[in-house]
Image 1 (tube, protein in one colour):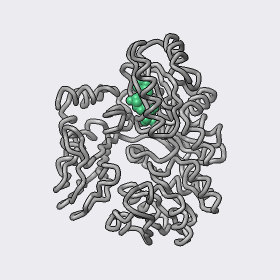
Image 2: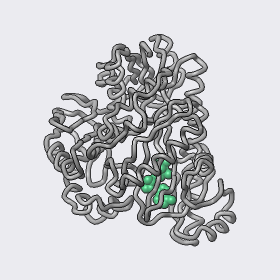
Image 3: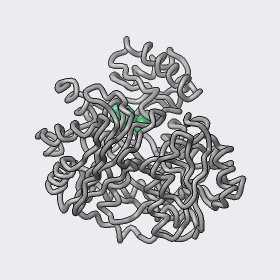
Length: 447
Ligand code: ADP
């Protein structure tokens, strides 16, 4: 096992990784920007190194600075967390060229899945069901119209390099296609430096269901069932739960096995998530994320496994601690993403937190790097905490979530906590009867 790991991230996820390292007797090195000198991940780590100014481009995304921090501190491995450099194949290559271990899959697998067209092609060949759409990139508007007529409308124009909901445009009819095609291309060019797009049938009322997979890099893989992330705003997840209210054990075992087999066949190493839209009993692959996800704690709660520890083990060449037979889901877990944002418009609301009180008690986990008097810098993501509850069934989890939300105090800034209180009052949410469009429609009606 490693002696020292550098955590190339900040906020709650940096703390999350530190906790797993600490329990395994591994020393940690925090990196931080000048805006994060007082951050909790810096305080908790065994060592810390400043890697640049507030702007993420010159600090958390600076490959040379992070490699230097590794060399100065003598860290043998880097955990990237999520976001920042976690899915950057070039970074992984540079890390490996410096004889440092990247805690995650190979550069080759990140690249394969980072391009959505190649990812879809690969998955299709591995027997994973995909959304009907164009075979590969669509270079011109004329091609788009011809293929669009074949797929049928509504359809969605997607950037092959896309992520975070960007570079995705809906064309309800043939007449909308020109605008959708041109905007998706220019948005993608601006955000990702690549204007290649493809077409997919637009599903009208699917759920977003994703399968957590884990490969040992030696041709073995397991799955940890699904997470339901259908509650979304602007294609961004807001609340996640496991298991999905729409899934039975047989379906879970079937799709889970397809996913585990697919990643085993490519020799995948570490944690990954295969995302699907699920409609009328059918799964449609949309993309694979080659990292630990924000919502991984709901899976940890239900399966009783520390996914970060498994990542550390596999990266160090050790076997996983579990086999597929060991992985039996237990109870129900729900996660709320608490953002520093002002409702109803979700404007960022950084600033000083006067009082912070984290809910506790049985079945409650609060992953956050907040503390009394902490000033949330305006330069980064607005996620300030994840509240995760676990109960013996879904009703218990909901009751516990309601109770835990009522205990949470983040005084001094605006947060999205009231949204979750309101959502828990909704019969559809109580019944688990919602799809990916439910929240947008509810927000239109209620704000
Ligand atoms: P990103 O990488 O930008 O997050 P994804 O491909 O994962 O993009 O899609 C994000 C979300 O967009 C999905 O969870 C879903 O809500 C919506 N979406 C994507 N593809 C389709 C589709 N073919 N039909 C309907 N909605 C879609």
